Length: 261
Image (cartoon, rainbow, N blue to C red; front, side, top):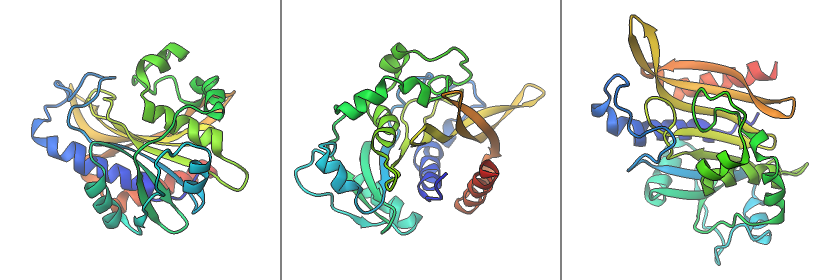
C-alpha cells in the first residue's frame, strides 16, 4: 500500500470542511445530514489521480484529460499547501492530478470516462468494491444495476482509472472525498483506489457505546483482494477527539505495517 500523504490529507480536509461546519447540527445520530446514498447538499467533494511526474502527459495522450492546455501545477509539499490549493481551486466537486514525485497538484476541468480500457474494467467493476461500498452493512452481492443506479461519474473514474492504466513502472492511485451520504451520520467518505480495487476508506459515523448511547467516531477500513473480490481486511474506530493530522499519520502508518505483515 502506498505511503502517500494524500489519504490522510483528504481525511483532515473532510473533517475541516464537511464535518466541523455542521457540528452544531449533530444530534446523536437521529437526524442524518442526508439519507444514505443521496448527495449531501453543500458538501465538498473531489477526485485526485496520483502518480509520478509523467501521469498528466499520459492521460492527455490517452485522451482522458480533455483540457486543451497542460495542467498548471502548484506546490503541495505539505498539508497546508495542499488544503490552501483546494480552497482556492476546489469549488464544489473538482478533479485533480497529483505528481507524487515532485509533490505538486493541478486541477483538471474535463475528464473522459469513455475509453476501451475503462469499458473493459467495467465488465468486472463490481469485484473492485466491497458489497457494502454504497450502503453500509449491505451483504448482498453487488450487481451491475447497483453501479448504474448509485455510482456517479467521479467514483466510476476513481475505480476504473487505476485498474486500467497502472503498468509495471507506473502505479496509478485514485483518491476521493465523496459527496454521497454513507452510514447513519449522512456524510460522505474518503476513499483510496489502486489496481485491484478499493484499498481503504474513512468515514464519520455514530458508533453504539452501550446503554442506548452512541459516540461520533471516525471509521477506518482497509481492504484486500480475496477470491477475486475486494473484501474487508481490518476496521478501526477512532474517537473524534483523537483525530488530528499527527494522529492520522500514526494510525495509517500502523495499519499499513500491519497489513503488510
